[in-house]
Image (cartoon, rainbow, N blue to C red):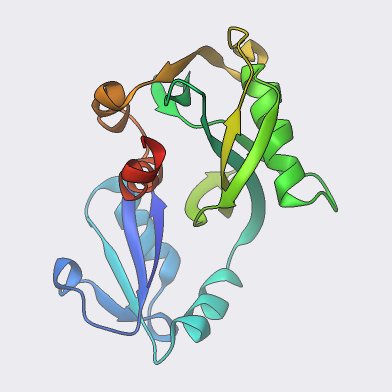
Length: 202
């Protein structure tokens, strides 16, 4: 199953039945997808479940309907067992940004963390699951795939927010402080942090 978010509402691509969307389960070839996306955006639909024989087949059908953008970012741990979070547009987030042409995802992720937070001396520990979200830009629906990496740093300097990108502050967050992040963040970030909470703080 693949989960994609639009305005924090989930779209499930699956080949099985999900209890949470029994009343919004559709064959992607038989619906007006953008009409359903509009329902998710305006709040008249809470979730959307798209089904096919295989998820791979469904993903191909789904993605060809959108302009696609790749981004990369990181969950960064320091030696004090804290993770790096940014505050932008009145929500907590993780540092990430658009991948440049022909740029490897690992390089893009490190570059974006450095640019948005000022934190350096970064090392990638492992790749994490990708997240997906849809938004409108100039009247066109865009599907953004973000490639995430778990990182570590030995940098002791204070983080510096990239204010020109709308980041107002950067903080190192302990496990006890994590709820303040997950209560005011995007659904895909909340999902990622909760899934890997035990690995982040050990």
